[in-house]
Amino acid sequence: MALSIEFKEQSFGVGDVVKIHHKVADRIQVYEGTIIGVRGRGTGKSFTVRRIGTQKVGIEQIFPLHSPLITKIEKVREGMRGVRRAKLYYIRNKSKKDIELIYSRAKKRALAKEAAKKKPSSQKKSSPKKKK
Image (cartoon, rainbow, N blue to C red):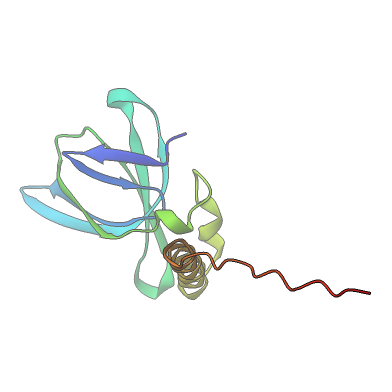
């Protein structure tokens, strides 16, 4: 199970929000959504993208990574920090607000870790021992 993949020197992975430019009947169409799964290996690798359509209906589409119809993939937002699974099928049952909450918690957690690394560790002062 892969968490990240590369396409023409652009790396992205599960949890990222991407724009996929693919050819449909003599024109290029843009499909924007969240990557919820990556499967396969080598030239047979594919990934599943989920977006919320009109009237709040979830739409999923599977794209083969090495398809000649895909012209460009842009990463809109990185979501890898909030992801701990290779397949995000559990977001099918969550609202957009709940998904944003997961990503915001992960972002706060990552910022707190970075702040802890930058902050010099305070040396503990030993208190003087009392004589009896």
